[in-house]
Image (tube, rainbow, N blue to C red; front, side, top):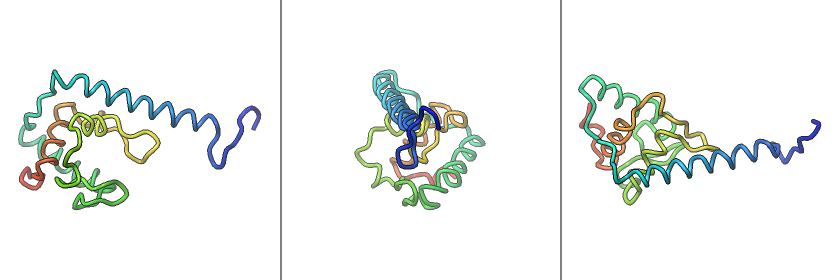
Length: 131
């Protein structure tokens, strides 16, 4: 391994990538918070899309956050667990993921408005009502 010093199981290069990813996430959260003045509409998607988004949350998010969203590999996504959290920060987490963690970005699958709607529904504890 010429030029790359291995530190434990990670190289300096991967450590830099993790730090750069964390910086990118922080910038995305700050940009989302700064753009809060021009809030992304959280109107519910149409009926067909809403069903698809709820299924995505239940199955894809549920694979890490628990099928009942009460926690697992990822933290709980219940109303109580999300109480006091920033909706803009949660939306940014959904869209951009959390670098250095298993949380992937979902921006290829959800629009900003849909991510905002998911946050709103989860924070109100009414995902089941959206079936």
